[in-house]
Length: 314
Picture 1: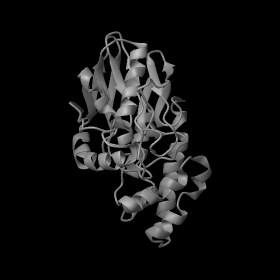
Picture 2: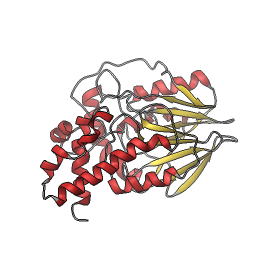
Picture 3: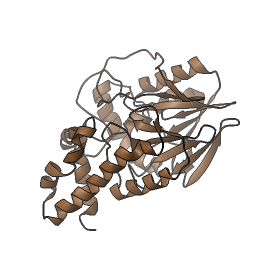
Picture 4: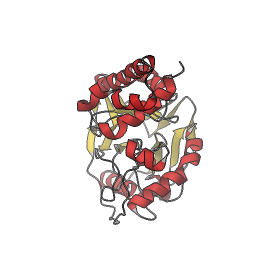
């Protein structure tokens, strides 16, 4: 699930993971289509809920969607459960009968990839960062166990791994519609993949971009800031965040994220310089950002811990 565990969940589970919240059981739902926004011609995005995963939301907390070309469709992340993916697939079939040729897997977190199994019958090419297979092999079973403890048995399914790996840059063609793919250095995670639609100038940033919902750090703070600088050079008209509105102007849409990450880095360095230990830093670092973000208290503490470990010996 694109975001990481809250502090409470991290303490309970002892492992940094994607948004895997409170314990619960789920009731199954039929795969009714999700409502999507057509943010640009042929690009349809479902807005994720600004919530942690619960039994009632099917882990539908990430922005997911699809791009339609003349010949085929690409899914831009499949959602956080089989039900989430099935609803997305139903939404696609409401709009177009074209074959679903590609399913992008933007990174390892469950809220973005646990719907992948809903598209198996389409026999798509699953596309991911070259580091994603290893990340999935290390985490899928754990994530699945925790997610199914919340949503119910068989709500995730067997592991799905990418069959097309992006080591640096690559392209896919939907029929007169070329999508540029970029494998990023360690940033939000160690397996971040972004996509750029040339036809409309739309950047599918996934969880390299958070808007309104507090970011979650599962990779490298300094690396994330570096990758943001590279993304800002892309001549995009708009960007699709992994969490937040379905579309924001680019590059202005990343200002809040960049400010938060810079604040986290600056405050962490200051705390270390003042001789504070990691527990003291958690209580003070980044607090100026609290009013700007949803779920701040659930995730900022974890982000501080990650940042502290990264910059302690620089």
